Image 1: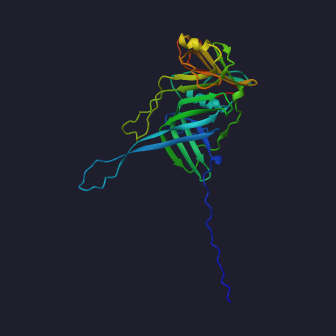
Image 2 (image 1 turned 120 degrees about the vertical axis):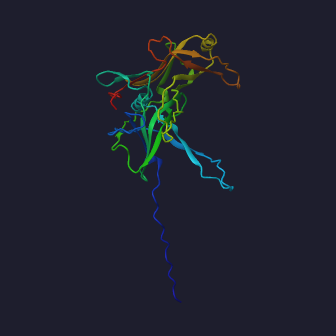
Image 3 (image 1 turned 60 degrees about the vertical axis):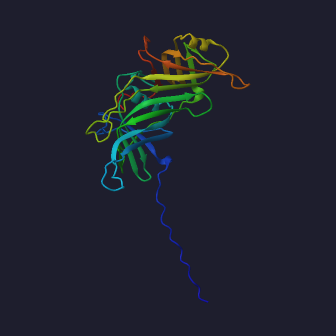
Length: 331
């Protein structure tokens, strides 16, 4: 009997696929809004997630031409926006703080240096590039600014912050806008390194605290001849708010809320000689009720708003980063 040979099926080679573990986010500061610098200095910033996206309106046509088929839609304005989740760390935090407040005031001649960030009249714009080297593809966003910044600490989770971005335009390239990138050392803060002070005294009963900064960017800046991009991102009034959750053991904080008593809050993370501090010198708590939810211990949640009236710090929010990194003003 003749033996029939069986040919083996040749499978096509598996093509590369973008993987998150090989991807990264590159950051550089623009010298002119919406334009990549001629000689950019790019940084590989640590992230947990980067979800900057672009969307563009498709405008349905109502033109009548004697048939039921619709005319091709036209394209409208583009929206570059999204969120980035970053670890709250000792070095990378300074790059995002500069994006929010501009150049800090820096003192010190060696480790540790003290960088103080305060509210300014304008914010720097950024080049942010989501890099997918497996393909390769490089998704560059120009004219980006920080619109919101928030974090919550306490509990038993990783300490991260969320940064909401608005931008102008996107470009897809086959090569990075800056190479090589400067890598940043990752030195994280953690929840157990956090403290909280109210009115100058440390609180031992707080289980959770949150901070939200809304920079009030005007994203509706589409102009004639601007190709559907935001031609600017002017800053608005900075609004600083948050909340603290505490064991309900007395009415001290509750009475401050009831009486609209001005206080202060200081959120701080400390690792030996290095620290990151968010100081709100003028704060008002919002009235709430603890309520009775179960047979277990009762907590009280107290939202707050920070403001500037006559504080010596000259800013509703003063952020101080003490670290061995020498300067954020020249990056």
